[in-house]
Every structure is written in C-alpha cells, then in structure tokens.
Length: 376
Ligand SMILES: C[S@@+](CC[C@H](N)C(=O)[O-])C[C@H]1O[C@@H](n2cnc3c(N)ncnc32)[C@H](O)[C@@H]1O
Image 1 (spheres, rainbow, N blue to C red):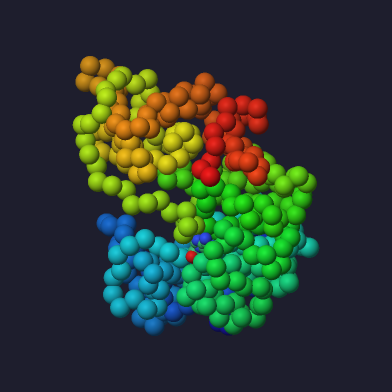
Image 2: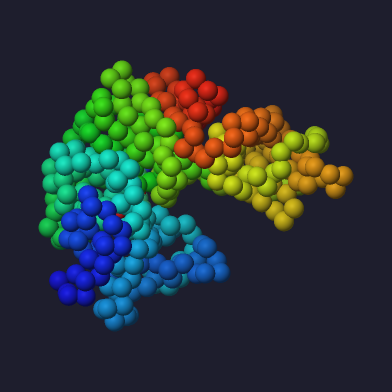
C-alpha cells in the first residue's frame, strides 16, 4: 500500500472527524472500491458522463480522486465506468457515496460494536467494509440489486481482506439469511418502508433510511421497532439522501400540456415548492405526483390518472391554478402546505413516521397531529 494512499486516508479520516469510525476510515483503502474507472459528470449537462480511467492519469492524481470527499459514480445507464468506451448518457445506477455522507449515515444509525447490521445497497462495498472493519465480518450482511455491481463489490471486499455475507437481489425484501438484525441501514432511498424490513429487525432494533418521493422531497427516517411489529420515530435533522432504490423509481414523466383545466385563485405561492420542507409536505399530499418548473409556472402531473395542475402568478395579483383530471392535485397540496404553515413551517425533523402492518403514517409534530399516508 502506497505512502501517499495512507497519508491521504488519514487526512480524510481527520477531516471527517468521527471518533467511532476513525479506525475504520484509517484502515479501509477506498481506492480499491473505485476499481479502474469512475464517471465524471459533464458540468453543462447533468445526464452526460465521461469515464475517468486510472490508467490515464498519474497514480497520485488517482489517489487524490479516491480520497476526495466526493461521490464517484461507477455505473450509468447500466454501463460500468470500466466498460465505457466513451461518454454515456443517462442516470447513475451505482456509486461510491462521499465518505462523509456514509459516516453520517452510520452515525445516525447509532451502530455500535456487537450490533448485527443489514445494509441495503452494497454499491462499491466501501461502506460495507467500513462496517466489517469495526464490527467484524460476521456482524455484516449487505445486499445489492445489480449483479454486475455486486460481483465487483465482492472482489473488492475480499481483495481488501474482509468477508461479510453478501447477497444479490432486491433489498426491499431484506435478507432473511442472518435475520433478525439489530440495525438495518439503506444506502439507497425508498418511497415507503418495505414490509420485509419490519419482519427482519428485532424488537428494539432500528431502521435508518432516507425517504424520497416522486416530487424529490426527502426526509431521513430512523425508526425503532416496538415489540408488536410496529416501528416509529421522528425524522432526523440531517436531510441526507442516497440514490433511489431501483424498484422505487418514478415512471417516466409525460410531456407537458399547458393551459388545460378549471381555473381558480390559490392562496399559496407556487414557488414555495422549490424549498425542501415545502416540497416534502406537498409530496405527502400527492405522493403519486411529479413536479416540474417552467420559467413562469409550477406543474404537477399524476401519471397514473393523468391529472394535472399548473400554478403561477396571476397578473391581477396573487396566484392562480389550473386543475385537470380526477385527482385535484393542487387542492391537496394547498391544504397540506397551509397545515404546515400554521405549524410554523418546520423542517422535516418536525415530522415523524409510524409504520404498522396496516399503513405508514407521517405525522406532523406528534403521532396524534395531522397525518398523511406514505404510498402502499
Ligand atoms: C449510493 S449506492 C451505495 C453506496 C455504497 N454503500 C458504497 O459505499 O459504495 C446505492 C446502491 O444501491 C443499489 N440499489 C438500488 N436499489 C436497490 C435495491 N432495491 N436493493 C438492493 N440494492 C439496491 C444500487 O444498485 C447502488 O449500487
């Protein structure tokens, strides 16, 4: 192992500053998990990705890249960076998340020595290996959806000298093999808490996962299992987010259709939905809807029913909305936003989530406050 890699690793660990995970950060060589290439995003176009190859740069430059506190995308549109013959267009499918964010996740999950952990989303295997280093191989199980990503992670983890339980499959079904777990963490975001997770975490154990919805609203859940098969907890202050679980991605958004529907005045400024907490609230009200912005208007569309809303400033003052279709999207959003405004416009951490076999209720303030159901 090179002196440069060791020095950069210690510097990164120092910068991240986590006492609990310091030794693991000092010892796990991130460069092994990046393989031979990563993608760099074109600054002018968010969906265009060029491979950066280890072989095409001085070793010190590659190591500096590996120990930068940055996310490195390793797969786009199903193509691994190593296999890319040129620029690739599409969405990232896998990455090595920036180390400080991985540590925020592990810290939020309150993982301690002696805990048995299930990780959803092995990715490159870097976070899996940090856990193996601290907790021991027997304590760590990780599942990855994509078999190519999983095989690469397996090689990297074993190559680094670790041996957790590694599974390939849809992590939304958990991994029964080593259940029950003390901690379940997901390094991919979900729309709703999968039923299987509730069955595979012991009473008193925790599920830590970012909730992400089709409007892009995010809240970071840390739920504790009660003995009766339910789980509850307030959302955390850290609004961290990982790429969405593949099975929870939104359907393609249909083209915009402007100027249709019934018109009325609206009491809320549509641009409010650009803020993180407001978007989270709107998403609670219309979880099947997707949002987009034009130069002068905010658009909602519910792909399932074809319902739409178009809201914008009214030249006569205030704002107005056009609503089309069976689901009155804006009515629901307006009501939820006003409820949130009356409560003082709290951050997502002012909400909590209770999951039972019957449903998944997000509550505002306390469990007996205003509630919304996450999608089934
Ligand atoms: C942000 S990456 C994980 C980062 C990783 N823990 C690391 O340290 O490199 C998210 C990963 O979750 C995986 N994933 C997405 N949906 C999944 C699912 N339903 N089950 C298991 N893995 C999933 C993706 O394929 C991707 O590799």
